[in-house]
Length: 142
Image (cartoon, helix red, strand yellow):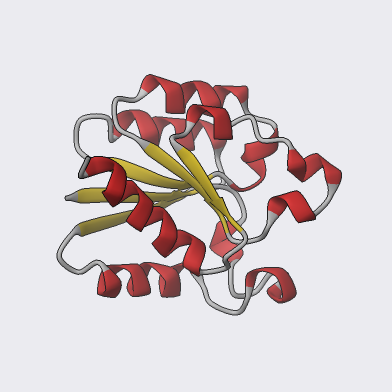
């Protein structure tokens, strides 16, 4: 199984930014842990701070992956274009967030992307990514 883990704006700063919320592990650390945990599957990673590039990545993967785990970062709350891109692809997408977004600022409680995804996992720190991959695998094995 080939799964892409795609990360949006500011997630390249994990490990340095707001460690009280996101912890001290980098995106590279997360990638390494997922590859180790799900070693029998091909896990590829992308990160961009650019909304258009994020949409292009989703489009470009349309025929090359079985599914996507997506952490859209701040685009979660404002990007209709990203939600439309998720709706346009043929593979399932599971949205993940490390923090419990519903317990944070009011503007974070509305996701434009969630409704386009097969499901959302939020609030489990680094484990949100592993839970996202596991959930995606369950969806794909049905």
